[in-house]
Amino acid sequence: MTILQFTASIAFIILVLVLNQQIRYVSSQPLGFEKESLLYARLPFMSEPAKMQKLQDRLSQQSFVTGASLSGSLVSSSSLWTSDAYVPVDTSERQIFIQVMNVDSAFVRVNQIEHLAGKQGLGAADEVIVNANFIREMGLTDPGEAIGLQIRFNGNQKKIVGVIGNFHSRTLREEIRPMVMTTNPTFFQTITVRISPGQNLAQAKSDLESVYKEIYPYETASFSFLDEEMERFYAQDIKIRNVLGAACFLAILISAMGLFGLSSYTIAQRTKEISIRKVLGASVTQVLGLISKEYVLLVLTSFALAIYPAYYFLQSWLQEFTYKIDMPFGLYGLAGVGVMLICLLIVGLHSYAAALTNPAKVLKDE
Image 1 (spheres, one colour):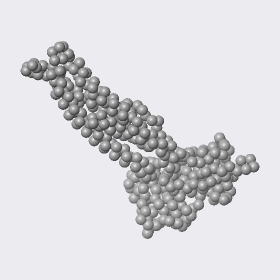
Image 2: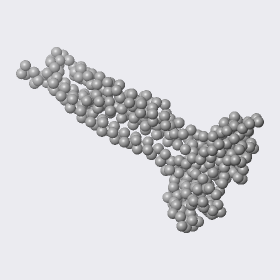
Image 3: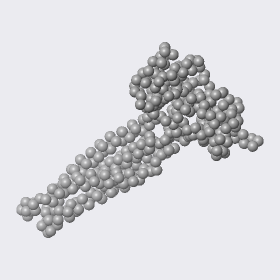
Image 4: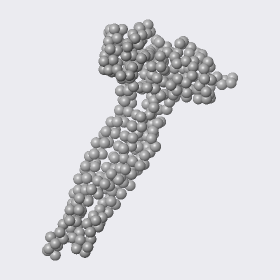
């Protein structure tokens, strides 16, 4: 029973440590855009382009705003529009599976996406901006070589006018796809606003909503922070980590209580043996080592049993991420050492008390 309890404890500790490290890893990765100080609001369905433009202009005029952009979706969200693009290769065409984003001329600048070549914004319906992965699929190495090339997309010929760096438009569970940015104001659904540094964000949010209400008096939409929206990408993983953390605490507590009782019973059974060994010259350190080595073997057995189920679960979970840490086997050892120290502390306290007992009191009836 004690071995099973420690096996569960070690397994839970390993799971919590690795999940936490992976969540920290994806949260700290460069995204290819600047998510801080960005607020967004949803636009009314099929709103008039002129009205959306008016809202964008009004928001851009605010003293604390550095830019506003209209788009079909946020720079990073759970939405996904995919299609096919065809690029000329000699006398034929090559098909590329792409992600499509519907954006305005300010989108790249407002979201601070890396600009590699050509124009930063779209000026006409027949123009597109592509990312670095797209030109790599075209077989090009220099972004400038793509400027002016024609591709076939959505049944029409489009001209590449700009190239941007790759950025994570989805979670880090997915790879960055070749991307084409096009513009169609009729289907804009979102407005994104960048706030200048050092502003009172709560006051800025309130002022933005006041302007929004002036343009759309019958709408109830409000502005939200992009970084808070992106935190929800891994909300389920954080819940799993927290649940496992609670289970880990309970497993350790139960194991410690069980070990406390087991060590008390074992030492009580061996009190006379300990006293005889002391009479024959055994030191306190030798007595502690004698009793503790049995529990060291117990923890080592538990560690061996815990490794495979923990590894199996973590390997399966990490496979969901395109961008992930290497399996941190060092954390496995850290979990084992941590449980070993807890075990030795509990057993050591009992053993030390027994080792300090006067042998004469124990053996007086013998």
